Length: 492
Image (cartoon, rainbow, N blue to C red):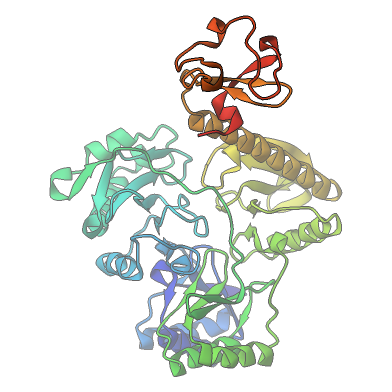
């Protein structure tokens, strides 16, 4: 009875004016709520008999859309995090927009465009993953994940910003023209793929080192927060539903306060950047008018669930409740919930649902497997099964145990890094300068100076002192002196 209309916002960047027009069209089809998807898309569910009304309005507006298909996945980017979660990088708003403007075609493979110095937007969930170099301005690493496989290949070249669009189109064409070789093939070869790419057409240079990906550390991405001399607003909805009425007023407020864009994120939220101090109160009024809740618990915000999956949302709510009851720490972990075979979610720890009985559409006795990504890094595609075939009543405890395993791994990694750091920082020891100190009064004999009061010339070794030598201050015997490094006495 329901159809899903998908509208892409390349890079997650939304024009308030365009979104407002889409929302007006949705209202004409009696649609009250919309969602945002994992790939920074707008998802609109409508009854079958209202689809024609809505799509007719979209056609009038010239809005591209798909109906119950996702043949052209959205290009996602880390732009929503730019300036608020990512700082001190050459990758600016203008660079993102130049790349997105250059991609004047609709890719049929998944394309990600991300800064390496962030973990807010998944970097390797695409098939063509562009990651900004941290060492060479306007150059990008490229990591291929072949469609319908877990095979990953990192190109040994860096690509210049202005040629990202052309290489993306060329690689997509090679993959589509050779499906048996590069699609759903566990033996897909990166070397074979790039052997078919005419590199002479592009500005590239050798990658001196492999891409360096940031360790996962999810920022708190909701609420009204200050940055520089402005504010950003992040809005999260527990049920993933945003009311049309609320979003309409939000768009109008953006336009009236001269904010030309807002962003949707891979966490199915929206972010408004650039709010001025004088307009802050207007945004608070909007949130109060629609009773939009803020400051959800962090252990709720770091879950990813498949798009349009009420079953996954219910499981998420169940698990969050138990994690809260036990006051379980979840900082630094990204949880994923997967109920469909072909779907993808970004996760350090994945909860995967399956049925013991699944015949002819009849699904009975759900159980859950818990999988851990390699090194608990959500950008990794491989890992291990932590626990298999858990019934629902055991799942929260098993999930807690996988969390404990994460923290044990993380603690060991921190200790190892510290040990390596100390070893690297430890100075090379040279022969030290030794002094001789009286144990009674702490007077020091320095071989380089001697003891002028007792006619001991400079350069006289302590061992060469006469047996009747005594401390010049307390007259303690020579045997009462102890050899000690000058550095230990902190003397210049």
